[in-house]
Image (cartoon, rainbow, N blue to C red; front, side, top):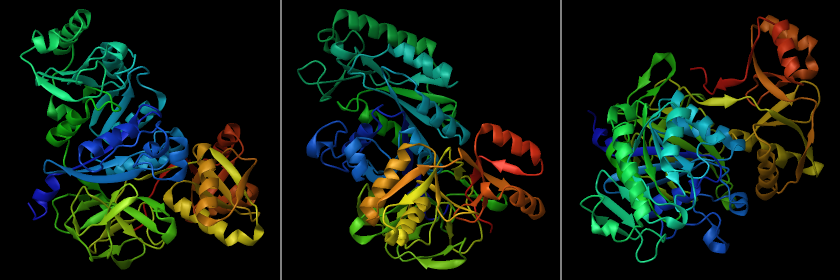
Length: 531
């Protein structure tokens, strides 16, 4: 094992995924609070200063109470370095989430106790499954009225085709909520005095007949708890680490992020069982192992203007191997140039500190002036590219309309910056000068308008176009030239000058695909550059 071996083994890099409003951002805040990274957690639905959730740092996020951009937070607890990647829950920003999932080794899936598995949860789970990412399930909001615990477990098991292994049980729900019972460790997590209050005390108990439980909890709730524990032991899988790491089994924790139930148990579980940084696939059939001596890393996200005063641009780099030290010169493989990383940073949302060194599994920020893009690979000289980062064909297309024609330069710079982040895709039609913006979800357009106004001092609007979707074109040059000649109005180029066909509707997709059998029209493409 190399010198960095012991250091990367104590890294845990994980994401939190969920449907909007399941409580993901609140859980993120409470994990950070429990890890000592912040003094007070912001509540997304609270008011005033209390509302300013630390992981939601954009103005639009704070105003709307949603996450629209992935954020990265690093903290230490009990000798373990946690790299927590908070992802947008809203489906309109799912592309950012998909790319973020390429940079993690495990994920916490948050489920609302009243709603169960929702659409976006299922989609994100499938992405995790494709990448064999181990999943920890957190059933949130058990302090409110919700579905029966057994019903939720059965839904996870059936809908996601996963073995479930309950680790804790709710002791009542809603108005009858008393706390959480850890049946493996025989611990009762409860409030102090008031029923249904925030988590304050853990009582070690001898079992379900312990007076510390029976003297406090209603008889009917105790009967239900006894039934749950018995059925849990017999009807669901016992926890098996190998099955969990292979993605076949999910441990399930019941809790309330708002009232601090289940937070400590999640962190302890991640420390004990979540995987250390894994190997990464690269071009040429190469597999990058985390215990290699040479540094490699890849850019999975770019964020412009995290600090609007400095017009900065940060590339989020997941380290795959080696021991990174501040000031190192690394090869930017796509550009074929060396870059000196003199001011790398660790993140806590909008707050930062200089990273003197970092190890596989860590996420560092590399300030740059537009050289680094999503999908770029940094190495100590090796000509390889990390693979597996997806780009998706947009399903909503709009023409950009500029309010002040004197500010065309600012508009173009803003759109190019936001395209580099992955927030939007931009297309330059073969005919006509107006750029076309493509997005996955309509809310992205609102964010683009707001950020162009806030960060670039330019007012833009969007107007409809006669196209509904785009597809990347792959074919030989002769066929491409022939197709362009016959459909010039429908041809555009993306920001990397890749040809794109703009389709009016689903019927035209089928018709053109049939007409040109030698052409591949791609809904997704991998962000990877030729070595």
